[in-house]
Length: 303
Length: 320
Image (cartoon, rainbow over all chains, first blue to last red; front, side, top):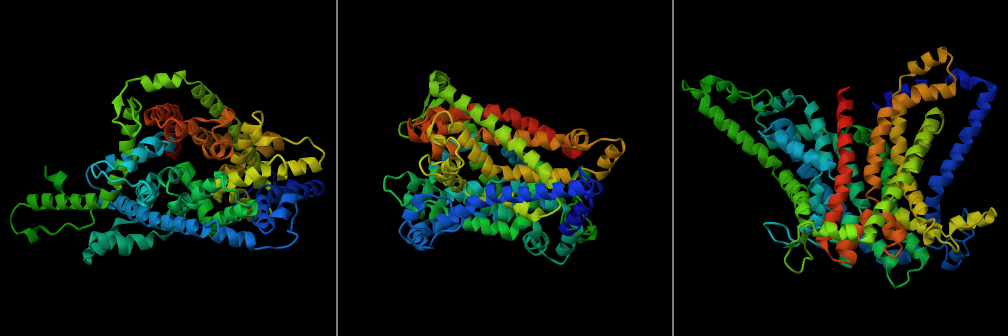
């Protein structure tokens, strides 16, 4: 699908027609603007990241000189090494991976089952439940911050305190109306005949979900998974509230705490920590940019 | 009625032939099957319903009741009616926070709303390096927000930060950036815009690509130059997307937290926003959850207006 649309896009005309552009004067202007834009984008969006990754390669003294350079004068890996071991970035990195992986698994299990029930099993009052879930999309996170904190602090009926446990991130994460909406829309398109055929062959509802619906839903599962992992990796305010024990913090929260603590961390080490926090997201993006960019424009305007 | 008990077409299990039940009426087995089907469906839904009940529906109700209580998590909550709201209105920080949030939102719209539009129109005309532009503009969006903000803290350093070094090198006046109350807010807006503009740019770009080329051709035949085409074709065609993005950005920028929290903290009142004040009331200074909840309820009320308009718009847009 994506190949066909990009081919159509490049053939489609836009504000300026190909004929206008072909005139020699306009062509020169076009290449001038193109070059400027390429350079401006590199300076605005790529250089800051390059500055971050390369500053951490300098010694603290070179860093303090602060003449902006494209290449570090000499390469020292010690800041990365010290950040990883002495600042304990390794520990917080693994925490974050653990929270993101567990959160992803729970979110997918809960949301896929809910979307499947709403789309294919269609229980009575299903639409009311679905509307109640969608309504939560209209609730800004800010409105729920304090009462949600009190909820994890003393879970009603069970009276357990989830603060400083992974569950404080995992359980609220499962209540994701956007995921359920996207999954349900996709499941709705799967013809019921296929499910009926599987049922006639003796498959239970769970088997139908696992053996028929999920394999057909790979593209949408990929998009939802990526957004779920990215969302958890980037989250800051909620983990800041519910993970107060420094040992259990995510990388983002730990970086904030270290940056405001009284023990001075050398800037090169701190910047190495920032780079380490950024790398997984950048790599993920480079691998899945089609999914991410496609899901972005589809989700924002229809979700 | 028998018809209402008949299995619907969407039911997975095919209806069994009537003979399977023998000669008796098919009513009760149908009812029993519908009951077990519903029980099964709610079994699949249970975890979802519970998580929404615990972390979305109940907190909403709790937040509203909390705003009428005094609650510090130590002593028992106490009903104080409108007391929290009265305290809020009397707190000078309350008004500062709203004024600052309005200023942040206004500036963020100016940059984060207009600039991506211009960039998207430009990118849509460029026929080379399309993938490069898309990846570059969206890269900052992928960074954890704390990384972008801390990175810019190094850039903003008044002594030896990148920005002042560059300004100094170009013989331009340097700035105190976040450390001066005059430039602090605009400095926060710049980080926020840099970190978030990729999303808006790519949404604009997607919308621009769906404008039918014939419209431009027709305008051209009528003698419309480039600016006239931009004004009379591009902008009207983009109206819906622009409106949706405007509402989405108002909703998200009014909840700004991490930039003022990390860069200026609570000491600099010139950048305290509604969200940082909520945090301050509940977790940093007062330990007063009722007061923080009252502040959240007010923010929610303001945002609900925008959310309602957004919902209405997108629903109409899907139909049309």
